Image (tube, rainbow, N blue to C red; front, side, top):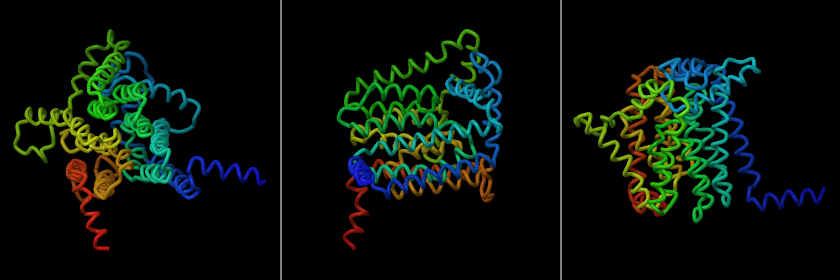
Length: 381
């Protein structure tokens, strides 16, 4: 027994993974999985989205765009849904449970990537992963809503984790592949992928080449479907590729076309701010996702999951405030769980967007100013 015990202790020391963080992460994983699965079993999900997946899933090839106008995304998610029908054929559960069960696995992979981002500080990695798994917004979005934003974000988290592990010599090819997969999964990640590439390399030229390559991959995914479904792709996907106009919360009386121009300018130029502040990809993505929620005109409840993984890596009081506001939105919105009938859907969503704006300001202010309240508290002690 002694050699075995010694080997086990050596393993713990080598990976710097002490029992307490390991046990805490295990408990968080079990609790997060339980809460998600409880909602998965209890609710059908958001009717429009889940019904859309049920319509598209039996089909493959060009028919995914011919059978319905509801599918306005790149084809990768449709092919994933088709594969899930193969699994569903061997299970005695509703297909919606299979879809959301897959998204639950995506959350677990995301948490594993967050944990792996800290090879030399397992305590922080375990805490960040647990924070993500127990985040009520993530639990409700996966367990109830059933949209696949977390699937697209998962690739970004893995890429950011790879960079976090090797900041001096990041694996740019792998990061490019993961960024391309994210963009080809759901095209709202366009500006997030741009942020990822800009923060992953010191060469702006490399970042531009990587972005051009990712856009080429996205375009190539439509080639097998184009001949038979080109008009549907143009109508359902390309024409919905825009982000419409920014939030009236910030722009007030600006004409709509100017609001849209402002949004595009902010999201395109924000990576240069991140480069100037020398942000890591994870922090840059937190900045980009909160800016998206703050400025984009079209924000719906499932978009509220976008900053969660990155905010778990860089937690703060303002991120906790955003989480609380977003949780209220998902809990109370008539389009979601509808358990707090005290406000309209727009009011609930705007509550989360106001919190996202505060978090955005916190991320943009100089580090010396951001640390001032903490220093003041320490002096008083």
